Structure formats: C-alpha cells, structure tokens
Amino acid sequence: MSNEPSKTNGQINSLVGTAKVLVGNTIEAGYQAVGGSSEPSSWTTSGQKQHDQGEAEITAAKAEGYVEGVGDRLEGKKDSIVGAITGDKTQQASGNVQHDKGEAQMEVNKPSQ
Image 1 (tube, rainbow, N blue to C red):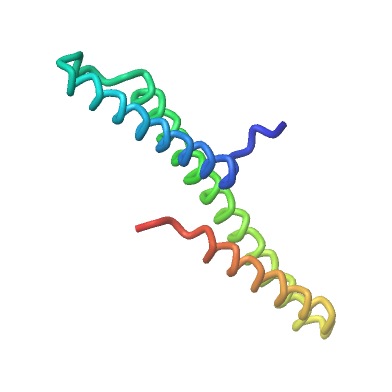
Image 2: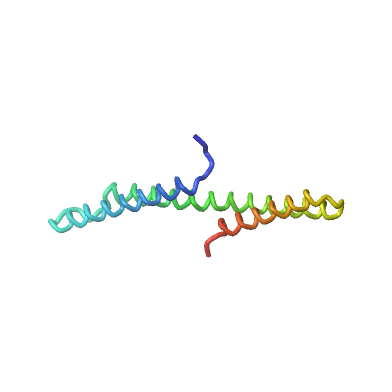
C-alpha cells in the first residue's frame, strides 16, 4: 500500500465522511426532538474529520500531479529544442509529445480557485 496521496482515496473518504455527517445530523435531530442532548454525535465529528482528510488528500494528489506535469513539460521542451538544434526529428517529436503531456497533466491538476 502506498503512502502517496490519491485522488480516488480522497474522494472516497470525503464521500464516506459526508455520509457519516448526514447520519450524525439525523441522529442529533432525533435526540433533540425528544428533548435529548444537542451535542454533536460521534458520527458527525468523525464524519467531518474523515471528509476533511479526504479533501486534503485530493488537494495533495492534485499538487503532486501538477508538479509532475511541470517536470514533463520542461523535460519535453528541452528534448524538443535539443532535437531541433541537432536535426534529430525523432527527439524533437518525442519532446513535443512529452511537453504536451505535461501541459495536459498540469491542466487536469491545476489548483482550484
């Protein structure tokens, strides 16, 4: 199992956390309706924590993907320029492909505003 951040795992944790919060809110509303405690339930607090951790993991995975995209873009640009200077069309084309791949990866992982 990897310690690398994962968008998929982050989305799952965010979704499960949100579901726990909804269950917790329902339990709390039931308790309050019969004059019980108005304190947040463990479902609500653990759900919010899991949701927040999931969102943080998504953000970390996107940042990592963006940085990888920057690296591919720069490496591709370098290879393209070297290929153009040396007349190596294969290296130039390969560099262009890697550059475009990096741009696409950056676009997919760009920070949310």
